[in-house]
Image 1 (cartoon, rainbow, N blue to C red):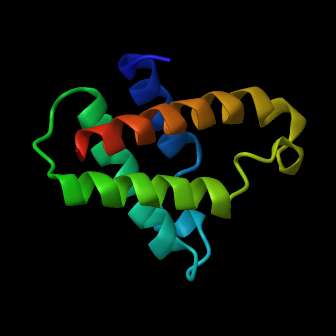
Image 2: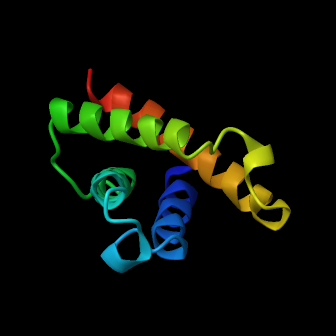
Image 3: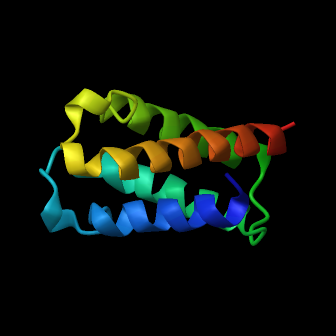
Length: 107
């Protein structure tokens, strides 16, 4: 995994799952999705070297990404439709790569 590929995968995830469309999500679920989308977008900026985010922002984004992975079972392939598993696994790898980078940038 490299920064360019991770950024592309995360952007694709946001798009495929309509994370910026309030109407695509349950009302009570959307605030979490909105926060995750914001963390993903910040992460993409970091991956592309286009942000001056500080340590606290990076730490919050990393925590949000990990919470999303846990909340939506991304690390549990049997919870996903078979045809989506390769994409989910690749995005999960991109998220773990990104979280490591965000945490490293926090030091």
